[in-house]
Length: 404
Image (cartoon, rainbow, N blue to C red; front, side):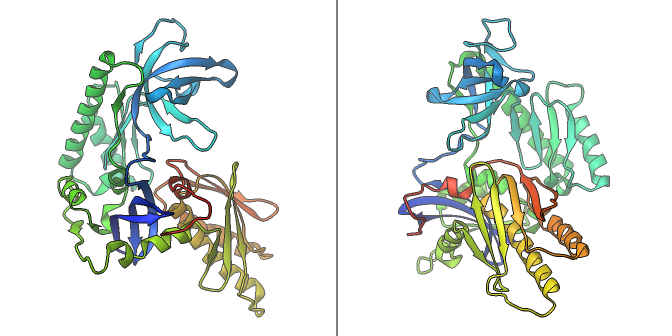
């Protein structure tokens, strides 16, 4: 199915947000938002000259100040090949040390942002890393392409082992020249950061991630992307200059009578993505309840009260729910531990078939998802990698969620 990527503005909870969203047949698959005035701008992937405020040996971690004195958490395990700009102590790390750190997890509620000394520079086809110095290829690439791309990445790096290269899924459909050109740009960016670091004071930002909509677009599979649409002339100019594949059209939407957000019903779809209950076509529903420690999802038969072939009917509801849950995880950007209570099935063959189909639905998610198993109590456990804040956390909440 072809997909469209939209960048526009919409009122959410009385505030204007910039919205980037991926659609498939007018149905929202993924969304990210940011206040139009930049008030909730992300610091994810930014690189700073950090100053170590204190070391917590009992936590195997240090607390590092970045811009404006913001405290971040740095695990000892993430201190590999660190780049120090000031090192008064001979210890691995000590209060007063200054070093380059990159934000790898944003602050969430009471938790500090997490930083690492493994600096990474991500492109559409490859990622250059400073501490992880191996050659890697996405597991989603076919075996034949995997070997070819690994060899090509090794040729790109030649004898230089001061960084690693991770080849992304999109590289399988790109030319060697395109990948090499991107590698050269990423390498230059990395070298510029290293060159600038010794002259910058603690708290300085040496590298700032591109606007969130560029980062999101970069991660979209281009083989299924039909076009990119925006109603902002400035962003349209940016997109036109960013070198998207020819198969991806870029369009400036200019119909004042039917605004782009209304055409795709963006506000309503985001509002639904913040609701606890999701109705399924069968009349069944799922309840999604994020908590501090994990997310709990419950599948209910709801209005579906068919009594004939009860087990088969419950299996079909579970299958429908599994597909919708996979979509909701991506749309809401839920992460961490997720526990799902499907409708109980007595037939083990049905359970195994459900898990098999669920894994297939989850594979469509660009964010790594690990389906652990079904417990003895019939609960399905999975984990989804944390990459950025959930959709609900991205939106400033003023009481009851609503769309203006």
